[in-house]
Amino acid sequence: MSKLRVAVIGARGRMGAEAVKAVNAADDLELVAALGRDDKRETLTEAGAEVAVELTHPDASPANVAFCVRHGIHAVVGTTGWSEERLATLRGQLADAPGTGVLIAPNFGIGAVLTMRFAQQAARFFESVEIVELHHPGKADAPSGTAVRTAQLIGEARAAAGLPAQPDATSSALDGARGADVAGVPVHAVRLRGLVAHQEVLFGDEGETFTLRHDSMNRGSFMPGVLLGVRRIGGAPGLTLGLEHFMDLRGLDLDG
Ligand SMILES: NC(=O)C1=CN([C@@H]2O[C@H](COP(=O)(O)OP(=O)(O)OC[C@H]3O[C@@H](n4cnc5c(N)ncnc54)[C@H](O)[C@@H]3O)[C@@H](O)[C@H]2O)C=CC1
Ligand SMILES: O=C(O)C1=N[C@H](C(=O)O)C[C@H](O)C1
Image (tube, rainbow, N blue to C red):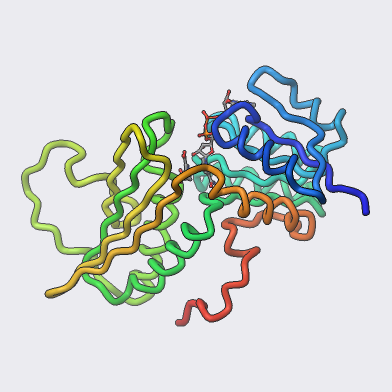
């Protein structure tokens, strides 16, 4: 059986280095290119990459992915910062590249995907909800892509259930004290030496609170999700948003 030819873009970064190790350790995958910031994108085509894992910086990711799509290379993207505008541009690029697949996953951690799903399911039952994401101090963006996606999913679930905006009597606050408003959900970002990637979703209502927490203790935690994406993306043309689409979530279906 021939091996799937995989490239890693951002290969010398924290996540990219881990992805290089994971691809090298997989019997069914062959690492054909490992690109750093100064390498030409043409290295991907010269190496005959079939799938590229993209783990760079929000400012660099759209151009890297556009190159892949133009050359029929499937992309598994973990980089954050994919705004609606950037996604719309990518959808246009994919329309001209039938057969090419791009997975954009805010978080490759299985527990993080489940946290998002459970938060979506719990959202309609509580008056209040806030998100606290906690990361290493080297992280470029805030709030995290995972927190933004979680807040969007909660906001959609609250709207679908007809819930009003959350009550909040704050009339005097220092800038930032109530976090960033994402889809009506306050999101707070902590940056602390010693942390890797963590998130709490706090729900509250009369007399009770309910907290979902996920912790990635190391970047190896993301690799089963990266490899799942690499193996599945060739069979999923177009844009896939979120690793959950490649996971069997039967029994965790969203109703309504
Ligand atoms: N989806 C997920 O599960 C995860 C996503 N991430 C995201 O992945 C991205 C990278 O995170 P880290 O590895 O921690 O960052 P990092 O800063 O350690 O690594 C990024 C690497 O990309 C390189 N780079 C920048 N521009 C480039 C370009 N145009 N071409 C090739 N390489 C380029 C940098 O030189 C650096 O080596 C961030 O957006 C982060 O939020 C991080 C962890 C998990
Ligand atoms: O930069 C990180 O480290 C992480 N980035 C992703 C995000 O922004 O959600 C995923 C995870 O939180 C780790």
